Length: 215
Image 1 (cartoon, one colour):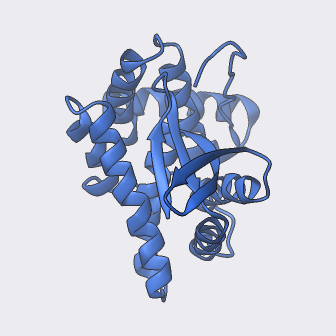
Image 2 (tube, one colour; image 1 turned 180 degrees about the horizontal axis):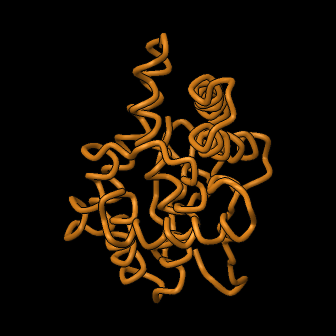
């Protein structure tokens, strides 16, 4: 079973699962990442990396006590923007692959706890965020990693807690290529690409994370 919990300070989501479910999810992610290195595959592989590190015991864990005894679930954290964008890409991408019921089930599990966790944490803005998982198709930008990093950076400067999560709902407009916010960000990358004499996908937005920020 896979479980999701919002982090205390609205920074991201904690994903928990047992060894078998996490390994199955890891396999699904690697298949959907494909063989070609792209901005999309890099997002999916970054997710897969955290999954692998968790079931290898290099992240966190949580114990659940029930009538049958104690179960230990491995856990890892993702920034909200990373999680939301990757879920959107996975749903779009799975349509181009020959999939098994297990692969489909893994994606449905992710989507199910994403929805319940977001609604539980901030019902007042849940619809504004969930549409970026279920309704709006995110185009395959070759600078997607930089764009997501920029969204995360803007969220981290907001006060921790619900205000940080509310900031996320505003920053996700950057995923719309027709928005002024997106156009401004792309223009910054294009200017830097001209200065460096390279393509825009070679310009990387450096995510600067203050060690003092709290999940």
